[in-house]
Image (cartoon, rainbow, N blue to C red; front, side, top):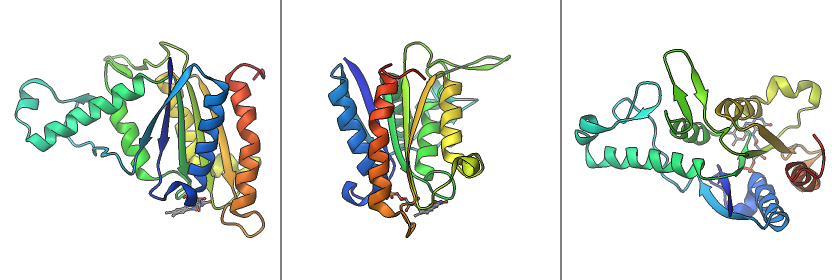
Length: 219
Ligand SMILES: Cc1cc2nc3c(=O)[nH]c(=O)nc-3n(C[C@H](O)[C@H](O)[C@H](O)COP(=O)(O)O)c2cc1C
């Protein structure tokens, strides 16, 4: 079986959060269309995602080990173990769905904190004196980013404002995930659009993205 890792980044309960409502609908429809996948969920507001610091993380991207690990407090050791287990969980998945709101033209800092945890030497990247290489091209992996935003950003302006999407696309491409799709839930806080219309439009985009991922639509 393949794994769909569904990552949410929002303190709101699902019924209040536009990104989570669309994320849940996507996951349900994706699993119905892809019965070879099972679901694992990661809520970045419930999970303890360590903040990287020099005592637990050394060099370019190495959780400490050996004597340095032995010298850590019990709580620091737990943080190191957590970082490694978050990375291993990420590595074991085939399809990733991240649902997050746009915050200050990007995404909530917890998502960045998570990304810093999963970029580890000899797991997701290979660091050498010459270069840093992504290792996630070992199998077919798909990334779907679902972003809700208060405003709407027409295509011509999107590159200027959608820093979160651009970053997520770039960092996971660098790591080796070649397939990236996005679903936008735009204009949630605008009088002329609003939550219901934004969700309805995003729901229409879900099947298009699922068809693209399953190769039914050429991209
Ligand atoms: C801290 C914060 C920053 C925000 N920054 C932006 C922003 O830069 N651009 C925007 O369009 N909306 C912004 N919003 C509005 C949210 O993106 C919008 O309400 C979104 O739909 C929330 O998604 P949710 O219902 O899943 O929480 C911001 C909201 C918060 C709380």
